Image (tube, rainbow, N blue to C red):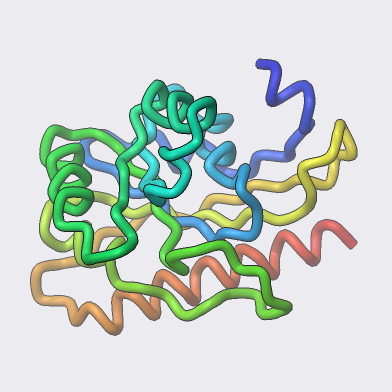
Length: 183
């Protein structure tokens, strides 16, 4: 409630998050508070994948542990993070992931997408809900917008490159809708 009051976000199509079973929320990533998108939009527990460097900071590290985030070791391929995320999905839970892999600090709408979201969806049968975040996290400025796209699944036969491109295209389309609406 505090975050909804403070940021006054516009949340569009949150009903798409009402998915039974395993769920992956895949979102663009421009700001460190972007995980708030799904946390403000659903009552489900969302296990976000968070880089290990944030766990080294006592206050924020404890916050991420309390939020049941998944610790991603960045110095090497984080097998434990992938295993933990897959276990959450196999248990019918929800994870949040940024397919760009890091915050986009460029002028490009999106960075190249990594294939983790579509790979996990294919392996676990999880539903992917794309999300686009735009605007700013400033006190009640009314410009923060979270827009969800239609849920979809990645079939066992589907090519991961094609599924990843579909996800990227959908998030870009949602971003464009956000920009058009904010004009």
